[in-house]
Image 1 (tube, rainbow, N blue to C red):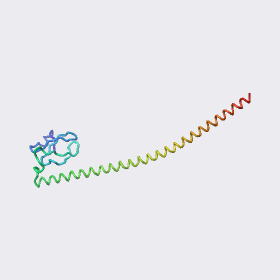
Image 2: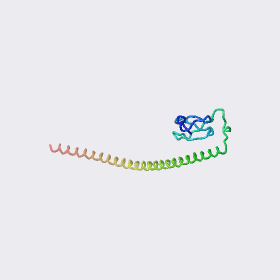
Image 3: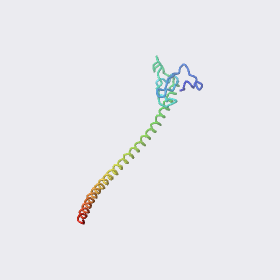
Image 4: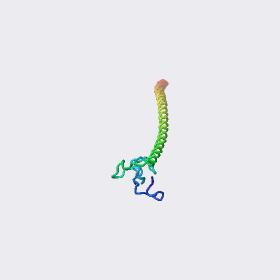
Length: 150
């Protein structure tokens, strides 16, 4: 698979299919025997389906045993690549699950701390109210003693 701008690396033949990657718009060229296959884009590495040329059917692309062997090798490479990506994605998912579990545990701990702080604030508020009542009572007593002293 080649990019048509890189024609120095490989000449484009009349039997090549030239198309653009639907994800990154990279211009791609590949032999018509790959029509209908999924191949990785040379730029973005995403799998793209090689279009079947107008007027052709997949049966028109029946290939020789040698071509089929090459296709099998290619398919094995694609499968291996997919398996590798699957393992990487599974590892990422496991990591995200661990992060999620840690976040939930941290959230539960913060909720416990919040409840504790809320109880402490309520106790402090009641204590402040009691202090205010005591201060008001003391102020009343001082005023009463002050009047008696006059």
